[in-house]
Image (cartoon, rainbow, N blue to C red; front, side, top):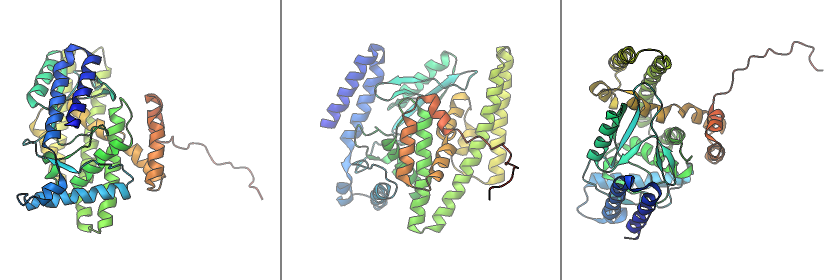
Amino acid sequence: MRAGLLVAGIGLMALLATGCSSARYYTQAVQGHCQIVFRARPIERVLADSNTPPALGHKLQLILELRRFAESELRLPANRHYLRYADLSREYVVWNVEAAPEFSLQPKHWWYPVVGRLTYRGYFDEQMARDEAARLAAHGYDTHVGGIEAYSTLGWFRDPVLNTFIQRDGPALADLIFHELAHQRVFAKGDTDFNEAFAVAVARAGVRQWLQARGDAAALAKWEAAERCREQFVQIVQGTRRELAQLYAATNTPPALQRERKAAVLARFQRLVREWKQESGCEGEYSAWLDQPVNNARLNTVATYYDLVPAFERLLAECVGDWERFFTRVEKIAKLPKPARRQALSPPAPTTGRADSGPSSP
Protein backbone atom coordinates (compact mmCIF):
# COMPACT_ATOMS: atom_id res chain seq x y z
CA MET A 1 0.00 0.00 0.00
CA ARG A 2 2.86 2.42 0.73
CA ALA A 3 4.21 1.82 -2.79
CA GLY A 4 0.80 2.47 -4.29
CA LEU A 5 0.40 5.72 -2.37
CA LEU A 6 3.86 6.80 -3.44
CA VAL A 7 2.98 6.22 -7.10
CA ALA A 8 -0.18 8.25 -6.61
CA GLY A 9 1.88 11.05 -5.08
CA ILE A 10 4.26 11.14 -8.02
CA GLY A 11 1.27 11.10 -10.39
CA LEU A 12 -0.24 14.08 -8.56
CA MET A 13 3.03 16.01 -8.79
CA ALA A 14 3.17 15.24 -12.49
CA LEU A 15 -0.38 16.52 -12.97
CA LEU A 16 0.45 19.76 -11.17
CA ALA A 17 3.56 20.18 -13.29
CA THR A 18 1.97 19.54 -16.67
CA GLY A 19 -1.59 20.81 -16.40
CA CYS A 20 -5.04 19.25 -16.79
CA SER A 21 -4.51 18.28 -20.42
CA SER A 22 -2.21 15.46 -19.25
CA ALA A 23 -4.50 14.30 -16.44
CA ARG A 24 -5.86 11.32 -18.36
CA TYR A 25 -2.39 10.13 -19.32
CA TYR A 26 -0.93 10.30 -15.81
CA THR A 27 -4.06 8.79 -14.29
CA GLN A 28 -3.71 5.66 -16.41
CA ALA A 29 0.00 5.55 -15.55
CA VAL A 30 -0.73 5.63 -11.81
CA GLN A 31 -3.49 3.05 -12.13
CA GLY A 32 -1.34 0.77 -14.29
CA HIS A 33 1.58 0.81 -11.91
CA CYS A 34 -0.68 0.28 -8.90
CA GLN A 35 -2.08 -2.81 -10.59
CA ILE A 36 1.43 -4.22 -10.84
CA VAL A 37 2.24 -3.36 -7.23
CA PHE A 38 -0.92 -4.96 -5.88
CA ARG A 39 -0.51 -8.14 -7.95
CA ALA A 40 3.14 -8.71 -7.06
CA ARG A 41 3.96 -11.54 -4.63
CA PRO A 42 7.38 -12.35 -3.14
CA ILE A 43 9.11 -14.96 -5.29
CA GLU A 44 9.87 -17.07 -2.23
CA ARG A 45 6.12 -17.37 -1.59
CA VAL A 46 5.41 -18.24 -5.22
CA LEU A 47 8.09 -20.95 -5.08
CA ALA A 48 6.65 -22.33 -1.83
CA ASP A 49 3.12 -22.45 -3.28
CA SER A 50 2.21 -26.03 -4.29
CA ASN A 51 -0.01 -24.61 -7.07
CA THR A 52 2.93 -22.94 -8.84
CA PRO A 53 3.61 -24.72 -12.16
CA PRO A 54 7.10 -26.34 -12.23
CA ALA A 55 8.05 -24.42 -15.38
CA LEU A 56 7.31 -21.10 -13.67
CA GLY A 57 9.22 -22.18 -10.56
CA HIS A 58 12.24 -23.05 -12.70
CA LYS A 59 12.18 -19.64 -14.40
CA LEU A 60 11.88 -17.81 -11.08
CA GLN A 61 14.87 -19.76 -9.72
CA LEU A 62 16.75 -18.68 -12.85
CA ILE A 63 15.81 -15.04 -12.19
CA LEU A 64 17.37 -15.28 -8.73
CA GLU A 65 20.55 -16.75 -10.25
CA LEU A 66 20.69 -13.93 -12.83
CA ARG A 67 20.29 -11.30 -10.09
CA ARG A 68 23.22 -12.77 -8.17
CA PHE A 69 25.37 -12.90 -11.31
CA ALA A 70 24.46 -9.31 -12.24
CA GLU A 71 25.53 -8.04 -8.82
CA SER A 72 28.67 -10.12 -8.30
CA GLU A 73 30.08 -10.32 -11.83
CA LEU A 74 28.62 -7.42 -13.83
CA ARG A 75 28.55 -4.88 -10.98
CA LEU A 76 24.92 -4.05 -11.70
CA PRO A 77 22.79 -2.80 -8.78
CA ALA A 78 20.06 -5.42 -8.37
CA ASN A 79 19.10 -3.91 -4.99
CA ARG A 80 15.67 -5.44 -4.32
CA HIS A 81 14.54 -5.56 -7.95
CA TYR A 82 13.08 -8.79 -9.36
CA LEU A 83 12.31 -10.38 -6.00
CA ARG A 84 8.54 -10.30 -6.57
CA TYR A 85 6.37 -11.81 -9.30
CA ALA A 86 3.18 -10.38 -10.83
CA ASP A 87 0.84 -12.03 -13.33
CA LEU A 88 -0.93 -9.26 -15.26
CA SER A 89 -3.02 -11.67 -17.37
CA ARG A 90 -1.97 -9.95 -20.59
CA GLU A 91 0.77 -10.23 -23.19
CA TYR A 92 2.49 -6.86 -22.63
CA VAL A 93 2.95 -4.61 -19.63
CA VAL A 94 2.78 -1.36 -21.63
CA TRP A 95 2.35 -0.21 -25.22
CA ASN A 96 4.70 2.50 -26.47
CA VAL A 97 3.67 5.09 -29.03
CA GLU A 98 6.46 6.47 -31.21
CA ALA A 99 6.12 9.08 -33.92
CA ALA A 100 8.09 11.00 -36.54
CA PRO A 101 7.11 13.53 -39.22
CA GLU A 102 6.18 12.07 -42.61
CA PHE A 103 9.37 13.35 -44.23
CA SER A 104 11.84 13.24 -41.35
CA LEU A 105 13.63 10.67 -39.22
CA GLN A 106 13.73 13.00 -36.22
CA PRO A 107 11.53 11.37 -33.57
CA LYS A 108 8.83 13.23 -31.71
CA HIS A 109 9.72 13.81 -28.04
CA TRP A 110 7.53 13.87 -24.95
CA TRP A 111 8.53 15.56 -21.71
CA TYR A 112 8.23 13.79 -18.35
CA PRO A 113 8.99 14.89 -14.80
CA VAL A 114 12.36 13.62 -13.48
CA VAL A 115 13.54 11.79 -16.64
CA GLY A 116 13.15 14.66 -19.12
CA ARG A 117 12.40 14.27 -22.85
CA LEU A 118 11.90 10.74 -24.22
CA THR A 119 11.07 9.52 -27.72
CA TYR A 120 8.05 7.45 -26.72
CA ARG A 121 4.78 7.65 -24.81
CA GLY A 122 3.94 4.55 -22.76
CA TYR A 123 0.40 3.39 -21.98
CA PHE A 124 -0.78 0.57 -19.73
CA ASP A 125 -3.94 0.45 -21.87
CA GLU A 126 -3.47 -0.67 -25.50
CA GLN A 127 -6.53 1.16 -26.83
CA MET A 128 -5.34 4.44 -25.32
CA ALA A 129 -1.99 3.94 -27.07
CA ARG A 130 -3.70 3.30 -30.40
CA ASP A 131 -5.96 6.31 -29.91
CA GLU A 132 -2.91 8.51 -29.33
CA ALA A 133 -1.22 7.08 -32.43
CA ALA A 134 -4.34 7.79 -34.49
CA ARG A 135 -4.44 11.36 -33.18
CA LEU A 136 -0.83 11.92 -34.19
CA ALA A 137 -1.36 10.27 -37.59
CA ALA A 138 -4.23 12.70 -38.22
CA HIS A 139 -1.69 15.49 -37.71
CA GLY A 140 0.62 14.07 -40.37
CA TYR A 141 2.96 11.91 -38.28
CA ASP A 142 4.22 8.44 -39.06
CA THR A 143 3.38 6.40 -35.96
CA HIS A 144 4.12 3.02 -34.44
CA VAL A 145 2.56 1.22 -31.45
CA GLY A 146 4.71 -1.53 -29.94
CA GLY A 147 3.96 -3.87 -27.06
CA ILE A 148 6.63 -3.86 -24.34
CA GLU A 149 7.34 -6.90 -22.14
CA ALA A 150 9.25 -5.10 -19.37
CA TYR A 151 10.16 -1.63 -18.16
CA SER A 152 12.32 0.01 -15.54
CA THR A 153 11.25 2.54 -12.92
CA LEU A 154 14.92 3.64 -12.65
CA GLY A 155 15.10 2.75 -8.97
CA TRP A 156 12.00 4.71 -7.90
CA PHE A 157 10.28 1.40 -7.17
CA ARG A 158 11.33 -2.24 -6.87
CA ASP A 159 10.64 -3.70 -10.30
CA PRO A 160 8.98 -7.13 -10.20
CA VAL A 161 9.28 -10.12 -12.51
CA LEU A 162 6.26 -10.15 -14.85
CA ASN A 163 4.42 -12.90 -16.69
CA THR A 164 4.93 -10.80 -19.85
CA PHE A 165 8.59 -11.82 -20.08
CA ILE A 166 9.04 -14.86 -17.84
CA GLN A 167 8.37 -17.21 -20.79
CA ARG A 168 11.67 -16.24 -22.47
CA ASP A 169 14.43 -18.83 -22.76
CA GLY A 170 17.50 -18.54 -20.51
CA PRO A 171 19.74 -16.25 -22.64
CA ALA A 172 16.81 -14.01 -23.63
CA LEU A 173 15.73 -13.75 -20.00
CA ALA A 174 19.30 -12.90 -18.97
CA ASP A 175 19.43 -10.26 -21.72
CA LEU A 176 16.28 -8.59 -20.41
CA ILE A 177 17.31 -8.64 -16.73
CA PHE A 178 20.80 -7.29 -17.46
CA HIS A 179 19.34 -4.65 -19.81
CA GLU A 180 16.85 -3.33 -17.26
CA LEU A 181 19.38 -3.38 -14.40
CA ALA A 182 21.80 -1.41 -16.60
CA HIS A 183 19.27 1.45 -16.54
CA GLN A 184 19.62 1.46 -12.76
CA ARG A 185 23.39 1.94 -13.08
CA VAL A 186 23.59 4.78 -15.63
CA PHE A 187 20.82 6.98 -17.03
CA ALA A 188 21.30 10.16 -19.06
CA LYS A 189 18.27 12.41 -18.58
CA GLY A 190 16.40 13.05 -21.83
CA ASP A 191 18.62 10.88 -24.08
CA THR A 192 16.73 7.73 -25.12
CA ASP A 193 19.29 6.66 -27.75
CA PHE A 194 22.17 6.83 -25.26
CA ASN A 195 20.30 4.97 -22.51
CA GLU A 196 18.96 2.15 -24.65
CA ALA A 197 22.18 1.54 -26.60
CA PHE A 198 24.14 1.48 -23.34
CA ALA A 199 21.75 -1.10 -21.88
CA VAL A 200 21.91 -3.21 -25.05
CA ALA A 201 25.71 -3.23 -24.97
CA VAL A 202 25.78 -4.18 -21.27
CA ALA A 203 23.22 -6.93 -21.79
CA ARG A 204 25.01 -8.43 -24.78
CA ALA A 205 28.36 -8.58 -23.00
CA GLY A 206 26.64 -9.78 -19.83
CA VAL A 207 24.83 -12.66 -21.53
CA ARG A 208 28.05 -13.81 -23.19
CA GLN A 209 29.89 -13.70 -19.85
CA TRP A 210 27.06 -15.55 -18.08
CA LEU A 211 26.93 -18.36 -20.66
CA GLN A 212 30.70 -18.71 -20.59
CA ALA A 213 30.65 -18.90 -16.78
CA ARG A 214 28.04 -21.64 -17.03
CA GLY A 215 30.15 -23.56 -19.52
CA ASP A 216 27.13 -23.90 -21.82
CA ALA A 217 28.87 -23.95 -25.20
CA ALA A 218 25.78 -25.04 -27.13
CA ALA A 219 23.61 -22.22 -25.72
CA LEU A 220 26.41 -19.71 -26.33
CA ALA A 221 26.78 -20.79 -29.98
CA LYS A 222 23.01 -20.55 -30.53
CA TRP A 223 22.86 -17.12 -28.86
CA GLU A 224 25.80 -15.78 -30.88
CA ALA A 225 24.17 -16.99 -34.11
CA ALA A 226 21.00 -15.09 -33.15
CA GLU A 227 23.06 -11.99 -32.41
CA ARG A 228 24.68 -12.20 -35.84
CA CYS A 229 21.20 -12.31 -37.37
CA ARG A 230 20.23 -9.25 -35.35
CA GLU A 231 23.33 -7.34 -36.49
CA GLN A 232 22.60 -8.16 -40.13
CA PHE A 233 19.02 -6.97 -39.79
CA VAL A 234 20.16 -3.76 -38.08
CA GLN A 235 22.50 -3.10 -41.01
CA ILE A 236 19.57 -3.37 -43.44
CA VAL A 237 17.57 -0.91 -41.32
CA GLN A 238 20.50 1.50 -41.09
CA GLY A 239 20.98 1.40 -44.88
CA THR A 240 17.30 2.16 -45.42
CA ARG A 241 17.42 5.05 -42.95
CA ARG A 242 20.42 6.51 -44.81
CA GLU A 243 18.43 6.34 -48.07
CA LEU A 244 15.46 8.06 -46.46
CA ALA A 245 17.65 10.74 -44.87
CA GLN A 246 19.04 11.55 -48.33
CA LEU A 247 15.54 11.69 -49.75
CA TYR A 248 14.21 13.97 -47.00
CA ALA A 249 17.20 16.31 -47.36
CA ALA A 250 15.87 17.31 -50.80
CA THR A 251 13.41 19.83 -49.37
CA ASN A 252 12.54 21.28 -52.81
CA THR A 253 10.95 17.98 -53.93
CA PRO A 254 7.14 18.20 -54.23
CA PRO A 255 5.40 16.25 -51.43
CA ALA A 256 3.61 13.89 -53.84
CA LEU A 257 6.91 12.90 -55.50
CA GLN A 258 8.67 12.61 -52.14
CA ARG A 259 5.86 10.38 -50.90
CA GLU A 260 6.19 8.17 -53.98
CA ARG A 261 9.96 7.85 -53.58
CA LYS A 262 9.59 7.12 -49.86
CA ALA A 263 7.16 4.29 -50.65
CA ALA A 264 9.69 2.84 -53.10
CA VAL A 265 12.47 2.89 -50.47
CA LEU A 266 10.25 1.19 -47.90
CA ALA A 267 9.11 -1.45 -50.42
CA ARG A 268 12.77 -2.13 -51.23
CA PHE A 269 13.49 -2.50 -47.52
CA GLN A 270 10.85 -5.20 -47.16
CA ARG A 271 12.17 -6.96 -50.26
CA LEU A 272 15.70 -6.91 -48.82
CA VAL A 273 14.46 -8.33 -45.51
CA ARG A 274 12.54 -11.08 -47.31
CA GLU A 275 15.58 -12.03 -49.42
CA TRP A 276 17.90 -11.88 -46.40
CA LYS A 277 15.62 -14.15 -44.35
CA GLN A 278 15.52 -16.72 -47.14
CA GLU A 279 19.29 -16.68 -47.63
CA SER A 280 20.32 -16.53 -43.97
CA GLY A 281 17.63 -18.72 -42.41
CA CYS A 282 17.30 -16.20 -39.58
CA GLU A 283 14.07 -16.48 -37.65
CA GLY A 284 12.48 -14.46 -34.88
CA GLU A 285 10.74 -11.11 -34.89
CA TYR A 286 11.85 -10.27 -38.44
CA SER A 287 8.73 -11.74 -40.09
CA ALA A 288 6.66 -9.00 -38.45
CA TRP A 289 8.55 -6.47 -40.57
CA LEU A 290 7.12 -8.16 -43.66
CA ASP A 291 3.55 -8.46 -42.40
CA GLN A 292 3.05 -4.93 -41.02
CA PRO A 293 3.50 -1.43 -42.48
CA VAL A 294 6.94 0.15 -42.15
CA ASN A 295 7.45 3.89 -41.70
CA ASN A 296 9.85 6.43 -40.16
CA ALA A 297 8.65 5.84 -36.60
CA ARG A 298 9.02 2.07 -36.85
CA LEU A 299 12.52 2.27 -38.34
CA ASN A 300 13.48 4.63 -35.53
CA THR A 301 12.72 1.93 -32.96
CA VAL A 302 15.77 0.02 -34.24
CA ALA A 303 17.98 3.10 -34.42
CA THR A 304 17.13 3.99 -30.80
CA TYR A 305 18.44 0.68 -29.52
CA TYR A 306 21.35 -0.05 -31.84
CA ASP A 307 22.95 2.99 -33.50
CA LEU A 308 25.24 3.74 -30.52
CA VAL A 309 25.88 0.13 -29.46
CA PRO A 310 29.25 -0.13 -31.31
CA ALA A 311 30.49 2.93 -29.38
CA PHE A 312 29.70 1.36 -26.01
CA GLU A 313 31.16 -1.99 -27.07
CA ARG A 314 34.32 -0.23 -28.17
CA LEU A 315 34.49 1.53 -24.79
CA LEU A 316 34.04 -1.77 -22.93
CA ALA A 317 36.82 -3.33 -25.01
CA GLU A 318 39.11 -0.43 -24.12
CA CYS A 319 38.37 -1.19 -20.46
CA VAL A 320 39.35 -4.82 -21.09
CA GLY A 321 36.08 -6.05 -19.62
CA ASP A 322 36.62 -4.19 -16.32
CA TRP A 323 32.99 -3.35 -15.51
CA GLU A 324 33.67 -0.77 -12.81
CA ARG A 325 36.11 1.09 -15.02
CA PHE A 326 33.62 0.94 -17.90
CA PHE A 327 30.72 2.25 -15.80
CA THR A 328 32.89 5.06 -14.42
CA ARG A 329 33.71 6.22 -17.95
CA VAL A 330 30.10 5.96 -19.10
CA GLU A 331 28.89 7.91 -16.04
CA LYS A 332 31.29 10.73 -16.92
CA ILE A 333 30.04 10.78 -20.52
CA ALA A 334 26.41 10.77 -19.34
CA LYS A 335 27.04 14.00 -17.41
CA LEU A 336 28.18 15.86 -20.55
CA PRO A 337 25.82 18.03 -22.62
CA LYS A 338 24.21 15.95 -25.37
CA PRO A 339 26.41 17.18 -28.28
CA ALA A 340 29.58 16.53 -26.25
CA ARG A 341 28.16 13.15 -25.26
CA ARG A 342 27.81 12.18 -28.92
CA GLN A 343 31.30 13.44 -29.65
CA ALA A 344 32.71 11.33 -26.83
CA LEU A 345 31.08 8.25 -28.36
CA SER A 346 32.26 8.98 -31.90
CA PRO A 347 34.78 6.52 -33.37
CA PRO A 348 38.38 7.76 -33.29
CA ALA A 349 39.53 9.55 -36.41
CA PRO A 350 41.75 7.42 -38.67
CA THR A 351 45.45 8.16 -38.47
CA THR A 352 46.52 9.87 -41.69
CA GLY A 353 49.91 11.28 -40.80
CA ARG A 354 53.05 9.59 -42.20
CA ALA A 355 55.79 8.26 -40.03
CA ASP A 356 58.79 10.48 -39.38
CA SER A 357 61.46 9.67 -42.00
CA GLY A 358 64.29 11.44 -40.15
CA PRO A 359 67.16 9.67 -38.45
CA SER A 360 66.24 7.44 -35.57
CA SER A 361 67.42 8.14 -32.07
CA PRO A 362 70.41 6.14 -30.93
